[in-house]
Length: 216
Image 1 (cartoon, rainbow, N blue to C red):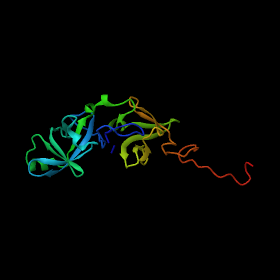
Image 2 (cartoon, helix red, strand yellow):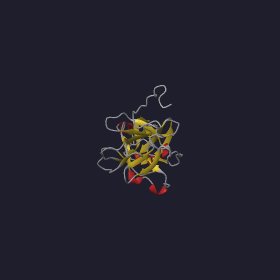
Image 3 (cartoon, rainbow, N blue to C red):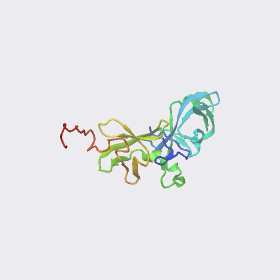
Image 4 (cartoon, rainbow, N blue to C red):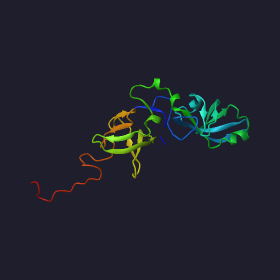
């Protein structure tokens, strides 16, 4: 799913967080944001390999203690980069057996730990975009934001409506006209978003070629 990093429509990512986010029911956190996933143990001293979902992978511990879904809390003591992951040592995890027991655990922080004061007016955390309802200028609803992706050509929002297949739209100023976090909605331009062709009367509408001589 959908990264946690800061973004602006059509702009450059310039903050530290990045975004694979998943919100799940968790006893300790009201609004959890996924920061990383623990992988295999590294060595014999309790270190683990972690897939970090931050733009700077080593920043995974910069926003306070990390939490698992079962309510445990983890303090990052040391972190260093490795190929495609970071190697992390948590307080209290001191041997390989303890490290192996963490394999597969997702690590979260509370949304309130993300530094809103650093945001400019037109910047947003990806975690806040997920769940917003996408409405076009005619009032038609195109689903909710269920993910944010970047395949190298710019940020894309995934929209999913009831009974519909997910679609991707560009996260650009042309496609996303307004972001209303309090109202829980995005105002989009359906044509610029690629959801319909210019001049169409609506989704799936077709136009026939006039018979020869008609309209002459």
